[in-house]
Length: 309
Image (cartoon, rainbow, N blue to C red; front, side, top):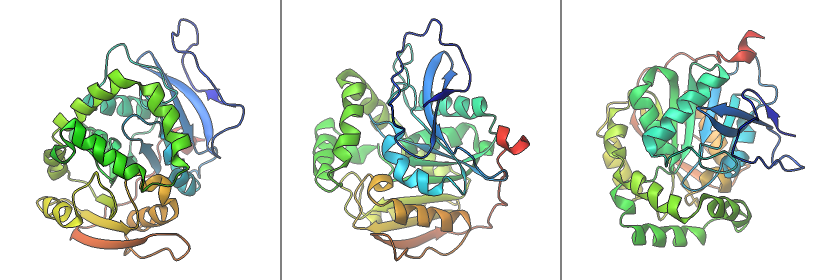
């Protein structure tokens, strides 16, 4: 059953629907951020000294499709998977949100959980949200992990993006339909056009080049929404940040769902500053292209409520 961490039910316009069976092994909880009910999942009993790791979902979706990867990391990190305002089971803000608004909501969510610093793992739209977060609050991000970063000129105009999404749909596991379809229907057509415009206008490339924190970029070699690895490497090489680019062979756009074992393995190695190598027990083969390797930052401890327990 979902539990509530703060706020009052009285006066809420959003009706909460809690499934009888949890969708994962993570605890399902509610909180209220700036007057909006927020649904999230969290490690039920993270280790006391675990570093916080927040997973941010993509365009039109909820955090549900991120759970295969998040669950694999939930015993090693204080794992959080929120549905951002307007997405999934969370309530809608009084006005439509853009990328800066969603980044602000992510900051406020960490504030609500009492977490000062976290590693942020984003997929698709979640990556621009992380870049905006880092632009204004670099001291609050331990590391950035950008999986299939979306947005920008490569996904314009809308008809091109729709074609890319259609091709990607045929390359994802069929079971993702049962996860993604309810999320897209709940998100709605007006929100889709508004959010697409916000994404394509967001200066993702400039924000990426401004990053000054250890960053991992993971792309699939079958992802039609991303330019080829050579172009990604060319752009990434323009930054002086500590950046590592990894391509997972056989993966498309929703790597967190389709290749959770390999992605979780790559994330563990990155977090430990170890060379990237294959997980023989998982599908997909990672190919690392090191852009810049700086001095590793010391591990950050979770400063949330569990750290003081």
